[in-house]
Image 1 (cartoon, rainbow, N blue to C red):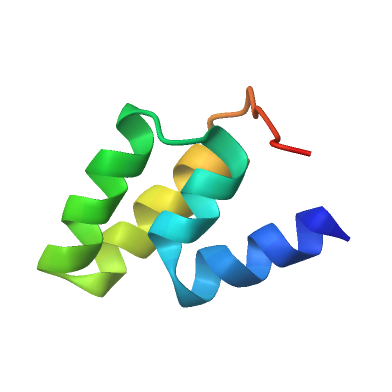
Image 2: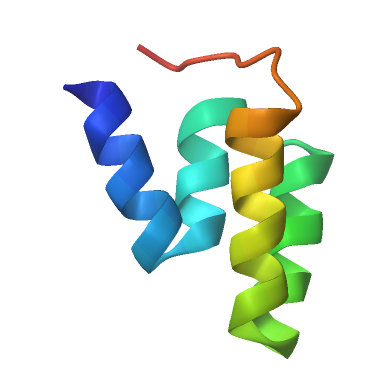
Length: 60
């Protein structure tokens, strides 16, 4: 269930999705900046960090 919520958060608010999977790490701050500049680069980065790069650290 938490994985589904993380996916929905990644699509709607990419920094929240990254924070749910990785915590407030460097990846979160990079994603926040990318999302504030333009939404699409933040979305791409969020999917890359959460689902392609691997090595997730879940908060649950």
